[in-house]
Length: 401
Image (cartoon, rainbow, N blue to C red):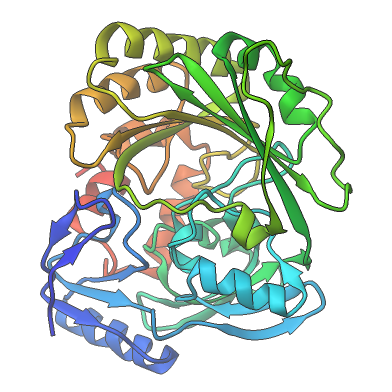
């Protein structure tokens, strides 16, 4: 049975040939085997928050929303179903005395979708959400059910933790967690020059730190989060009171409530992950271009965050400490000219695009950016030799065709 699909921002709309909501792993396996035999394409979909066409298909769209919840917990680990939404998962883990190390800015996504696209938060000591994944269970394109971990199919773990949904349908993930804790969120505004001058200190003296730059006012809003029990230490960099807004304590509470923010207004977004050493020059050029070319039409902010380096093959932070720049635009306004201009700057400074957001790169552009690109492609061919999960959009992204 088919139904139209529209993503969160409204920029991606299509009607797949079929739509499936399996209730368990056996039903997922039946879908995969049937698709392989018939030559159909399957695309797993989470909440639809991504604005890139990763899930667009004229085959069958597979939602795992019926496969949600915590399966098991042991110590500081929990095994969860792939369709679990981050919002409900955070509350369930907290009730069990556990919490994720970090979260992204929104919590609409499913855990499988968020990790498959490299969703991330901010903080020098934290990788993207997929770095918290220690085990993956998936139904490969052959119909085989695989457990991937440090002790089982370990050679596939760097591919399976961030897979774009092209290795198989992820039915379960095991997460490395920690005992639950509360965070204290603060925010204040400051001139952009002050923020940039103090950025390194702000990043190193706060557990989580990011900032928005507002092109219309040329001011920033600085946001920090630290453990309420003081374990992460207070910030040593505080604003003066010479006409700036005083720091405001916005909230104290569990991570799943303090880190994600409600987003009622829909927006489009392009985000690139930059080598941290390239950030100052890149941001200076982004700011120059926006002020000189786009300020009249850009009413939304620019978000800057940080991610720790990791060793996951398709991770945008692979092998390097990373600083991200995200440009947002109201979903009702034109975005392509603005985003393409920003993409040209990001590419000039060695940026890698966020997999779930707007970009115009194909395999020929991407291969040089990811040192283990060919290893991931070998894993994909091994787990999905018949292209059950490969659509024309993904072929352009992964194969360049």
